[in-house]
Image 1 (cartoon, rainbow, N blue to C red):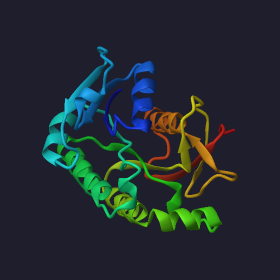
Image 2 (cartoon, rainbow, N blue to C red):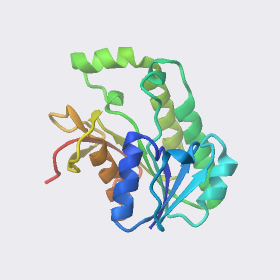
Image 3 (cartoon, rainbow, N blue to C red):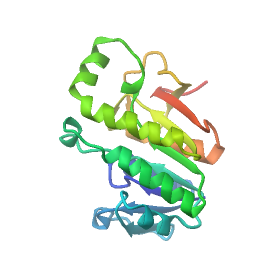
Length: 209
C-alpha cells in the first residue's frame, strides 16, 4: 500500500515509519522538518509541507491508499490553548476529498471516554486545552465522508511491544498504559485489514483474543 504519514517525526510516527517499511509499504512522510528523518530507503519519500495547508497536502496525496495521522502537540504545548489538531483535521479531510483518498486512521486519546476514575478526572483538568482540541478534531473527522478509524489509547510509553487490545466505543478493561509502537501497529492493521471503518476504538496493552 501507499500510505501518507502525518506526524512522522513524533514518537508514534517513528514507529509508523519503522513498522510500515518493515511490512513492505511505500510511505510518504509529510513533515515540516524533513531533516529530522535520517533514514533513507527506496520505499520512503519525505515531503516538506505544512499539514495546515490543504493544497500542499492534496498535492502530496495523489495516488495514495490511506492517510495515517499521529499528529500531536509537544508536552509543553499540550497545556496551552490550541486549535492545531482540529485545524489539521479540517485540512486533511479537505485534501483527501480533493485527492480522492478515502481511508484515514488517526490517533486521539482515551481521555475522551467518560471514565470517572480519579486519574482521568485529574488529567482532563490538567490537559483541558488539549482535550478540547482533540474533541474538536474528532468532530471534524466524524463529520467527514472519510472511511475513518479514530484510535483512543491510554497513556503512552516507550517500549518495543506491539500487542494491543481493542474495543469499539470503549476503553478495554484494565487499560493503564501502552506503547507508542503498539498504537502504530494498530493503525497499520486497520488500514491493511480494512477494519474498524468509521469507528472510535479504545486501546490497551495486550493482545486481542
